[in-house]
Image (cartoon, rainbow, N blue to C red):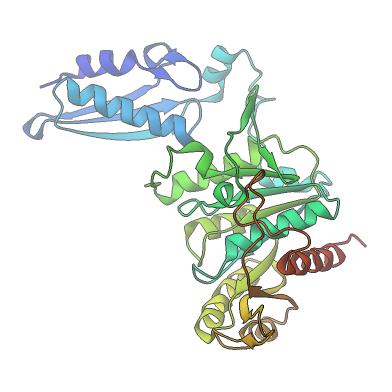
Length: 357
């Protein structure tokens, strides 16, 4: 069985992924505990910055190293290395390098309008609405950013036909730009279509990084595609952004509208203002006859808007986007598509409702 000294040497030779310096030099091995009877090794590691793929990769490297050398099971806890130690290896002034908080971003006369796109349940087309509203705002000449905050069910890059990854500029991440929208998503930081098996605190840290470590540049609007429901990630976003506005997405079906009311109630509970309701899948219109079929019922969005004392921003029929093989974006409606025109009208309403008085 491994000894404390052997674990200290093995882990000490691994490098802090942020500083690129061995842990034996950073003093990043905080504690080592060994239970010989079950061949279990527990280590506590201090690294320069928590969250994201670097922490995940380091965790896997530690587990692999210790198991290769005789450990049966491995437990790992992380904490953040103190700023003075980090500064010693980066050459930065720790006072100048404090992470920028969301409150700080919001308090500096920042003109950005934060708009969260929320829903009570999955499958109502929330992400489709988020990407098309972002593109519609960009077509209106606005500078738009979009955060795919649906950490477990990220889909925005695929919907927009994004193949490339974010760039790195110094310590900042440069978002990918597509259709005039700057995009950041969890999808950029995991292996292709791999599941994200993280607990709430790590997800919250990743979201914070999306705000503070991404070089968004000048923006008029920053849209957030929230996870469905009222779980950890949605709550994190609500608490991070005290002045965010929300758009609630639902379908006409009574159950969807009933569940969506919870998302609206959460917005009000956290003192977010509800910008309006968008009803998706409102009806199917036959190209042959022009008849409308109300497949999921009728007026669920209007009833929800009335319940939340908000405006119904638009009703979106079921329709396939026109695909351009040369510029493939499977979920983006063209400006002359029926839904493209409706999204443009919704974007104009959003601009009017968010104009600074």
